[in-house]
Image (cartoon, rainbow, N blue to C red; front, side, top):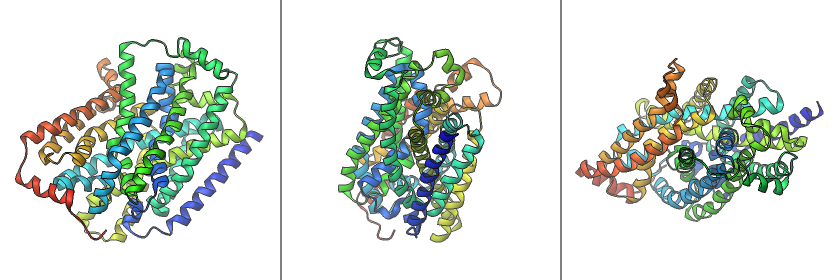
Length: 503
């Protein structure tokens, strides 16, 4: 009972502080630009930690860390290293400064606006709006499931109640003021995540089950350490590494972090901060998950389910009460940050790019509508989270479809001036249809299909996500060689050299 009280007190202090940040910062949010991109005033630390906390949530700590540990042992750490190198360092190096420049010059607030301005296509903007809003839902739902499973195991809180609490907290932060509140809250939560994961690694390694660094070394030489793997396992592992690393290059909630950076110098500084954060948080998270065989047998883990491996591992470690509270703060911080980023991106995209042009709404009305849509999105995500779908699958469907559709036309547009509207459409539709294969199979299984091939394909989310990104890149080049017109030149000229005066 004393342990429970200590944990609840720790969490209560954290939540009160978070809400106070929301109320204080929310008073400064007055326009749509403030609500969506923070007035483009974010410094390196604010931008980098906001990026990192949107990147890593309980989905990584719980779903992916446990799943990769069970399947690949210590080789699962490659996912964390890949996230740091490809998903953070190279992502910021290649994308941040150019995206910041374009979005600041042209006063872009969303990814669909980027496509409309670059390719001169309102249809592409509308398609992007719909895809982003619909297929952000599974990812948002996976965040609910990840945190709820931890709270259920460590605190004994009912799964449903935990998800409701998460939804309410995320909704409050967004209703207070959007990006500004989210970014400042993310800064606080990013610091908590770094300290929390460092302490967690220390206590897990020192636990009786692991046996210190000598135990880790022994484990590395054993059957579940760095032992040889089959070809199919290597393919599956690298598909996970590439999807969770390069997948961020096409996700609108990550790209919009670049929109809010203050200037070029802050973008350059953000590279180092973001990379360090990812090495510590992602590397540490996957490392902890990879030690699962020091705690449980393969049969025990299959029986509890991969979404419950890490929560039970933490429970068995015997963490001190205060650290247990910090761990829960870490997971809440990571999950609420991600949930807020995903919700704000999906909702602002729909209100600004889809509804506003039709209804001809004023700035204040758009802000109000965006807040309402945030609540609607959170409710829909909660409903989807209650379906019987593993965290890893939901995330892979979402990331695969969105990044498979939009990574190529976004990244190539920053560097390749000859990319045409027709080429971009080829890439978008080709990537979308490729990534839809496992998601469609999953829908069929939920509808009662038990066909072996359908069930098997439903579990190939990461592989199809990687294939979709590659297919999209190839089709962008092929399509540009086939479909090009004079209209492409005028939109391209303004995109690379134009200037919009008013926000």
